[in-house]
Image 1: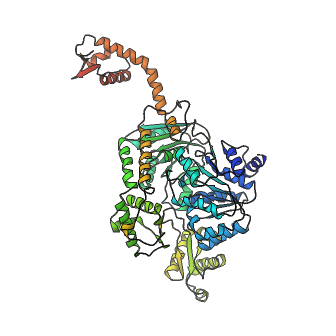
Image 2: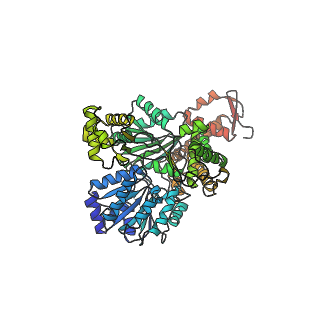
Image 3: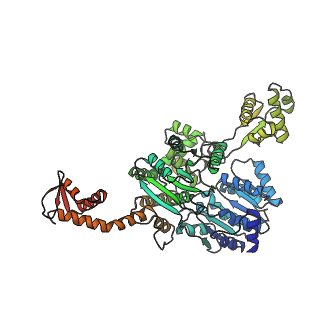
Length: 638
């Protein structure tokens, strides 16, 4: 183990491993397929980075999170470690260059999005990677149909193992998996033997609170001001609400930013940096925020909107208190939320006929005939599509995801397509153009010097990099490129993260479209069960919150946590029981004559008013007393 500790200290600057990191590293280091079950914040990346650096060869890392893979590659390069990525949005030549570098060079890490695993180019190059030492599958629950975020592309991972000409151990990592999902992951990834390293899901420093309220905005302000120290995250359901709630918090004197997937990369980076560095206290966000976030002093995670699974809630709540200090995970709800959550079943699993109609409309939208369309990729605007075909965006998005899972299309909403440029005039024509002034000439010369092959086809460009080279602002460069495109000097495709639809197979007759039980019925039933579990969690008033969460993930708690809202309520009731007995006796003695007494007469008992009210409610519920017109007496049966 000395070599692992040495790498941990010399490369990453840590003195010792945490939790089960050492167990996982030793297991995969011995060449054993390993499933690491680590709650959020457990330090998953070190579990594959350290053993890879301790041996010769390349680690192939499969992860669906493009932003996270870019961040980790950036950090590895900063430490002098060769690493690169292959993901959707890259040009063919760039993918080819990265793969060749990994075959011929001494690269240590190749991060790949799961969708790239299906490409013929990647599969062909993989067979020449004679230096692979490990495969790491992050977010491994995505491989299981019983996982809360199943992705069909993950099923390709097992087939990759057969393309590699020698045995390579596989490390699967996840923060959220039920016992059934744990077994399914190992089966689908073809583990040679079952081998799970897991740490307790218990977070003793995290206080779970569920609070029913009809005024969530005011409640959030109250909570934030009651816990004045540390950063906070407030999770909401949609993008519009992030902006509205952020403005409300600022009007109440709190510093806040909002975050969602619709922001540009620059906007997201700036807002995350402001929050990470403490320039603002509260991040109001959709579930797009959080992957790869490693901020230690988050004291509060508040859920304004109910999540649709225990897994999602546990992962998001777990971003609080990573430094081990007392922190709070608060879930706000009201009865309307429960109804809304149950309605999500219909929204996420629209009727099969609706899915078939969506498929037919998509084919009309792109003018694709029967037996045509295979392999074609199209930019997709859900707003435009729904306006034309009078469909609802939420159900349409769900229908497209189900068509994706069924293998008819590839529907991507997390694209990161870099800007592309191609000169469509000859070099001779270009040199005769002098209408743009000194700034335009500076931009053109820099582009010609920086990007090769720009006359032969599209090349990827980076406006920010051009800004550094030319001294021109990124906004000015964008406007100049748009102007050149308008003059038909260049073809310019600006950076975008617009969704895309790729037809995986030729269009078929709509009536032949088939949704297997595994794609639709089984998944719908499982989704209904997950929603039932989260509703049970929020409406529970008897079982310790921590105990419920642990039980869901197959772990038995020895004791109640003693600090969640349920446990504190029990303590309060236990302390009040002797006092309640005294109040009950006093009321019974006053009413012993079985006559009607004015309710105001109870004041003569000189009892604590809130305690008296509570006891009277209990006595009424148990039919020990009865009231009529502001009068009270013992019930006739007493």
